Amino acid sequence: MPTFETTAHFKRDFKALKPEERKRFEDVIRKKFVPDVELGQFRPGLRVKPVQGISLPQGARPVMEMTWAPDGRATWQYGDEVRPGVTHILWRRVGGHDIFVPGPA
Image 1 (cartoon, rainbow, N blue to C red):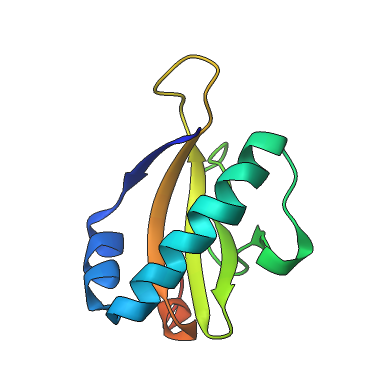
Image 2: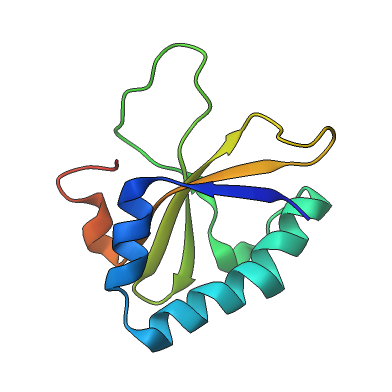
């Protein structure tokens, strides 16, 4: 199972979700995202792709986005391994399409 960390912005976003949105996000992570990370390939329904239009330092890992509901998006990056051989995920933002305005963070 991958290890996770969250940004302060993600924590604020997550807290602002309605209880049913939090549950749906957690269910998608547990039942779809985690198995796909372990498999090394994401199912089409998660619509995982790099976030467009952001500048990162040279050599930085791309910021990725995924869909967890019709208007549910989350952004994340692969991070440095915390445990050897185990994928690490840094969750950056979670919410609706508005997490991309004025731009990803």
